[in-house]
Amino acid sequence: MSALIQRLKHPVVRLLSVFTGPRIVYGWRNADGTWCEHTRVSTHSCIEGREKLVLQDHVFIGHFNRIDGSNGLLIEEGVQVTNYASILSHSSHQAVRVMGRRYANDPNPLGYVRKATRIGAYSFIGPHSVIAPGAQVGKGVIVQGYSFVSGAVPDFAIVASREHGRRAEVIGDTRELDRALLQRHPELHALYAHWAGKDHLRRALNGGAEASATQKGHA
Image (cartoon, rainbow, N blue to C red; front, side, top):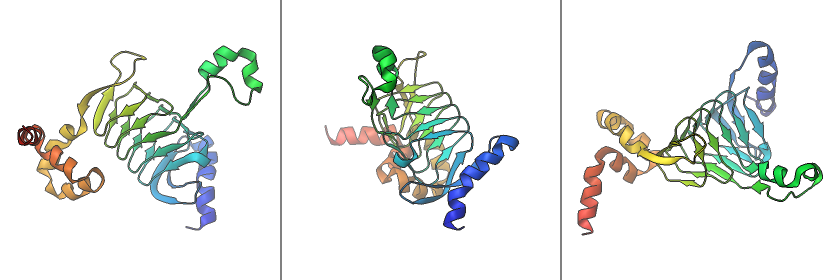
């Protein structure tokens, strides 16, 4: 596929989708020219600040999301963003409140937040979630639907907001979720270790037994 066709593919399909409905488009070109053959992006997700947005390969972005790269957004390999999620790198609500009508014409509004955001490899962003500006979501994370995520989320965490509007908390570990399937299918071990690391593969396979042995070794 020529570079010109690659460049025109997404806007043309987006235009046609006005008549055909939402579509997933295969292939994504970042502002630096890197081509991600296996990345898929909906024609009906709002993409802002593309010049500072980096999508790695094998990313999936479904319908009706807001992806804000205006102040830096890295979405690493294999991330899945479902539907109706907002992943943000800026926030203006406080600036608008405190500045009122002056906000519209001020080049540097007080209270305006600009922070780069990152979503780690092979993480899953559930529907109706908000990833706040500056959030650093680790690899292998599950963000359950209707969650509000801010700050740092550790690798392999399962996070959820226990109450509507409250910051998401860690409620589990995806390595435990993956254990049974990995134990039944050893042919998957190398694929899992490739992105997660061999130590995390062992943790996924052995779980608490390995953790207990490590603690005894340090006793």
